[in-house]
Image (cartoon, rainbow, N blue to C red):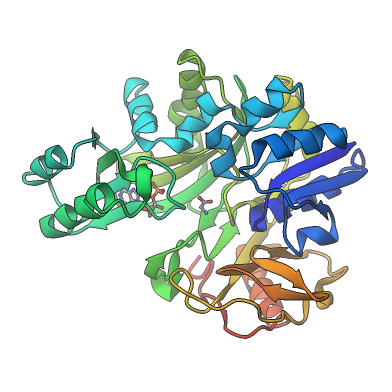
Length: 420
Ligand code: AMP
Ligand code: GLY
């Protein structure tokens, strides 16, 4: 069969690598892809938001299955476009992708269906938000309602910071329309865990757990980024936590969406915080995590095509999802200066040393081909993933492997998966 993947980051490279393992697949296309994806797929010069072109391409090439990796096209309704054209596609429709596309929607959903989450209020007026903040308990969290590349969340320690935050999001519109509405949320503390799941509209199957390191610098200092590294499984995701989430969060979220007339098919990514009062939902995403996918998918035993098809056909209950009994760590190699400003266009050396190296992966995030050479083309450049019998071993393997790769301005955190 022929598969089209939509997206261009490390997540899409990890999806493509899993798809490439399926004996059912003869040809993979990726729009727009990157230099690494280009080694296992044919990259097509169509942007992820160019829905009509994507549909035309899928028709012309007689694509059997399209997999949408990114949040923007999902929230914008790309799945509906493919379905209208009679094409098979994996991902939630627009009316379900709102689970990620609007934080105000997801908070209201959780409240209505008693799914554990932080207390909150939604505001579409800056004056009302500021009035509320005059007496609210600090610290407090402000979130832009819409998509903001994971950066629309402000944690405010003082009332002054919170007032300034309302101005940034709602008046200065730092994240554009995404800040027309904001969620003002109770500040929580605890370990964070990412749990990805496959969903077919009614059945949900949970993947192995993972944890992301979102801050740019060691010791969780510096600015929030898209993610500087991940490990899987999370030792904090215990059997008790799993049992609680199965009882109160996972199926409840899927059922809530179908009761709202928005059946969800695709990936639900639960961002959880393990608080003293039990696990609570920080956020939902409607896609694989990036770089969570880079540690979860290499550990999955199933043929990913079978799982995608079962989701589309509403037969996920027939799938036994299985993961290897080991661990994986992904260290992101970034361009120094990310997430603020950084240079691009430097040649990346050493990639060939990973060819045929079992248990090791280099997922490309921001790379491109330039005159036959692979060069840096983004803030997050590569994700180096290694497996091991234990997290400690996987971590040692991943950091050893980062030494094989070199490019100007290479930057990474040195504490991914430390202190486990
Ligand atoms: P989100 O995009 O909603 O996951 O938020 C991004 C990050 O902000 C999370 O991964 C947390 O580290 C932090 N965060 C979000 N909401 C809260 C909260 N209510 N309390 C404490 N930290 C939070
Ligand atoms: N790594 C967090 C995310 O994909 O949203």
